[in-house]
Length: 624
Image (cartoon, rainbow, N blue to C red; front, side, top):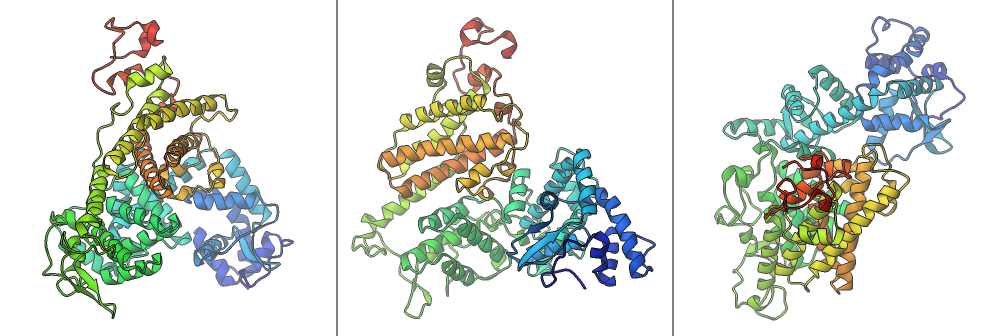
């Protein structure tokens, strides 16, 4: 009899008795999973004895192929004296329990009408020894997790990809060697535990690919198109979120859906659904209608607005059949291109869909009749009544608002070189004085990122003017105060930045860490500081906006743009380019960084333009 939700778990049974409770077929399955040879012919009692002796001694080799989630599950079981009670929310939760039971490591069943997991003492004893004395295991498991996430990330971009080519590509993005045989051991173990991807005719295939043969055929006929090669951060993000990092079109949809008070999780579910359905060749009509249902939008004006945004996102969605490229990139066609002939009968009708770039301007020309059918209508002229129903002319109502909004989004997406344009080095030095440390340089960079966004909203946001100097002075002052309080804190986060530190304090504040970049989700002292600093900055901006009588909607939008840009800076610059040295080496002198941050340069002590004493630096600190 097998263990499962219909069987009572008996904690008085020892390991032998638990194994004896399984069928011979199940015991043979455990043997095969472990790769034990020479015992397949044994009778049940003898087979149980062999498994009882061999499994505890083989745990270390198995653990070297698992990922962090499996490791954490085992650690959680070790902390329980008898039973670990679990909430089953999906079929995947059952699969995970089955995975461990099919290794003879844990057994699950019913205990007083609850699902409970039981780990025998013989397994616990060996696991505790391994976890205590095999210190290199944590590093191996962390690397395994990274390998798996990157594999999923590649498949999110390509859907299906040749299995043998993946290890080499992944290794090129890592700082350590990945032996092919170890890669496949890790991947094999992951496939046993999770239903995310699988093998398919010499390829790895993402589970959400409905027709892998079609995807492969479409990729093969485009031999003149190179695979898009995402960077390490892009791959890791896709591997965790099952969607490429949101581009400006996807962010526009996210921001719009926020306005109708959908939760971040609901919005992310909608965007993932849209990404996967576009890649599975589902019609735009079906996608739009389904998203309308998911978001609860039935208002006509909102229908057309969201439809515009979805069409724009379709043009810029990375597609499996295009080898991770977008239709617009492959065909070098802009959204302003008129292809109304191809969508003449309906905005949703597509021919050669996977090579089509849809003109979003065409969408505005369609109207819905009483039967729910969308037809092409007369284009709204400047002097026509505004479609919003206000009774005003279009040019006096929504036209200007739409043009202003498009200009704002364009400016926010342009980006610019980071310097002291918005909060100068001179201002910082006057307020904070010398010495200038690396943490000061980090604070100055953050202030200028915030300043850039606020300046754009002041110019193009059609909102009440924001007190730029007031915001930035508070960001700098509070940023430095936060740093000094961290120095005095007994937790010592800045003394050992990579040591494990729980991020539960943020979760308890209602913050959903899963929506943050993958680098910032790792529970370290470094990330605790980064998150505290960014959220402290956002609190400052939000407080200023609300006190200056900006609406909550405006404050939410501006704060979201700022938090996205700050996280992008931390992951793309601090993590990727400089190795977080402003935080790790926070106490080091950064006069040279301040000097070269903008032009003109600061006075140089090596040239006698300012004394070392004045800037509180030594000759070793200055490296011109």
